Image (cartoon, rainbow, N blue to C red; front, side, top):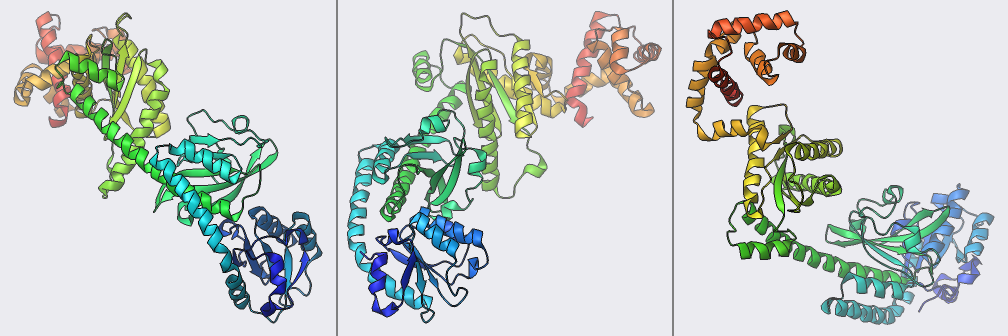
Length: 564
């Protein structure tokens, strides 16, 4: 294995000398590289010997010191500077820093080109790779055996931590914890330093924001500093990726020892194995999800008729078949500007929005007065609320209050428009499909009638549902014209608002004072309108049958409003 001190004996680069950092002369050299970019630290690896003309730091003492410190923390073999280009002699501050960190600092005579020196040293260093390759192959076989035995991420993490002698954290692509392995010599306990239990990113936003978005393309680890109560913890962050797909990150909590070249190779292998584990877990979860969704589809379409089958499937998928259930459907309104020409992009974005909605529903499930089951289909979130049969059935107002709070929370956090339809509660789960149908019908009616309501219970629209689903449009229009056609034509001809006045009058139980307040009208103005309506309709608005006909006609007007 080629070491830094061996460079002094290579005749082809005679005149090379060490001026500082002699403590590191036993550092192994794996490869030689050129350092002419001050932002190249994320791309460097342990045991690299760096060559430079010094151009990038010739007039910057702070950068000179930073380079020595960074190369030392990465475990680079040393830094060789070509003399007489930008330095007649090396700055004392660099010499002091190199001695402080034990990083070999060498002077290269001006007569040598950097490319020639790289070629000479790489040729000498190539012989050490046979042993490294054998060690690497042994570790690969161990990781592969763990995978074949079904050991999963937990055993891989444990072995990796033991091999590189540092604590390990494995997170998903959203920085949520998948697994961690502590190390007995770690003085900064992971449990005491990080929030390892909550279903949220375990690192601070400031730390996460320092990670490049294209880290999965870099295919290597980078060094970052985590600030822990004034203490700076060195972390190495490695993407878990296959091709361009990112599955998470490995974070090395570097508190026990610095990493060496072999550690970085093992980390790369572990990253690939963990990525395969994540792919396998994702495929298994997708199969489970498909089976679960098929069950929900059959349940909500009323296809499961056998009580025994229903009981078995409910137990399997976490529903209590003895509970009373009602269904709530949340529709994400897709505006024209939200539509995409690319269907794949559109589906991906909608899935992300829907998944965020599901998470919020579960987050607010404690307000539901029952047990929540939530999933999504395209742009609709389906919420099943189950109640113990011994509890009082949930009232319409309670269901609407929960839905309204949920609607407000979704609107605030997702920044979309939502409509929520609520079905009736049923004593038996086999009738849940009726509640689902009712909730969907509420969404349809709210969209069809262009109402301002954003949360509606089936009982709010039961008359509309009866009229709209059982009678043809032509019959509805004929009924309306016979009952309120004259008022409608008068409004069109004279730009009056008698239809609206009638609606408000009945909504306020024919109370003149309440109606005038609701419409911001003077009492006498309202009375005049009512008298005019009586005159046009030739009625005194007292006959119960006549009042029922008018109210039905007003509801028909809402159903037909877009077409009239």
